[in-house]
Structures are given as C-alpha cells and as structure tokens.
Image (cartoon, rainbow, N blue to C red; front, side, top):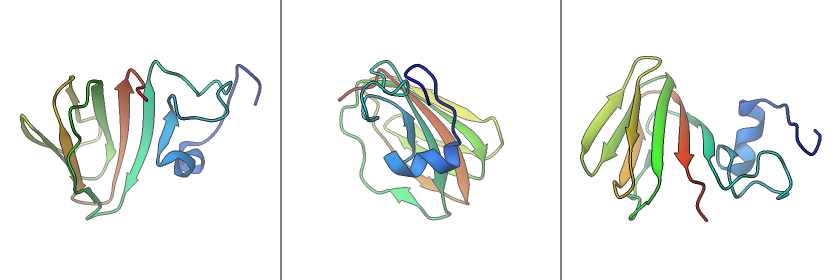
Length: 116
C-alpha cells in the first residue's frame, strides 16, 4: 500500500469496518480509502440477518446492488426484494430504510456523501 494506492480483497478487508471499504471512517485518515465523498460497503449477510431498527432522517443518496442471494429492503416508500444478480435499488435523502437477508446474500452498497 502506498499513500495514493491500495489493493485488497473485499472479503478480507470488509470485516474491519462492518463491511465498509471506503468512507470517512477509514483509518488512518491519509489512507486512499478514507474519503468524505463516498462510502462503499461489501455486505455479506447470512439468511435471517436483518437490521431491526430503521435509519433516522438519513440525508444521503444510496445505491444497493445485488451480487447474489435474496435480500429485502424496506423503505418508507415501500419494499423491494432483490433476487437476481444485478438487481438494484436507489433512494435519496429523507427516505429511511431497514433490511433483511431472505437467503444468504452478498450486496454492494454505495452511499454519498460520506457523512460523519
């Protein structure tokens, strides 16, 4: 790893930051993956894994992309089930969410900006 270069593996790196690979919370702050512009998460969720609580007044834009499995996303606007590789959903500021893995699932989350 150099000051402006990083090579890794999402399965290896994700557990260190609850799945997040990029974002303001990456340390040290001079790591190329530390950014206030965007957050990227590699989410590995066993069947039955869920976020019981809802987000509260999130003011960011989010994209959730299905890699594999079956994953339900509950939004204040309704529910979406991602079941086919490549399925995705995107939502904007002010829409809260919760989720549940209906089968073993891998999803990529991209969220911007990276807020503190």
